Image (cartoon, rainbow, N blue to C red):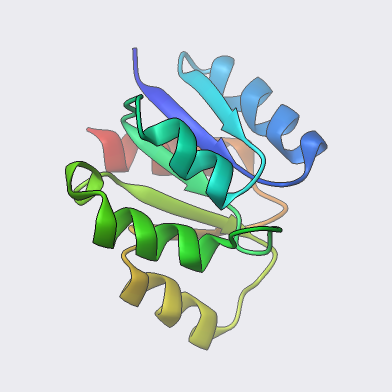
Length: 121
């Protein structure tokens, strides 16, 4: 079963992601911000990460940069950014940090699942 880590400071967004992804056969693990995700990934593995950008302690850009830079075992792990941000400069910054793809909130469940299947298979 594909295991996905969702990283978002919004409890309701994490719940919506969990319902959508679990309902399509994915296992979901959650973190409330980038730092919590980094801590969890020290001892755990996932097939895909879906992260927000605007979060306390460690935002999505910092999370992606640290994950790609310091944690070599996660260098090739697909990372989808799921955020309300939609400017080209933010997308470019996420891509430069190492993001695999970008999805704007609110998300369409079918498109999210299609994107997940595309990057993990």
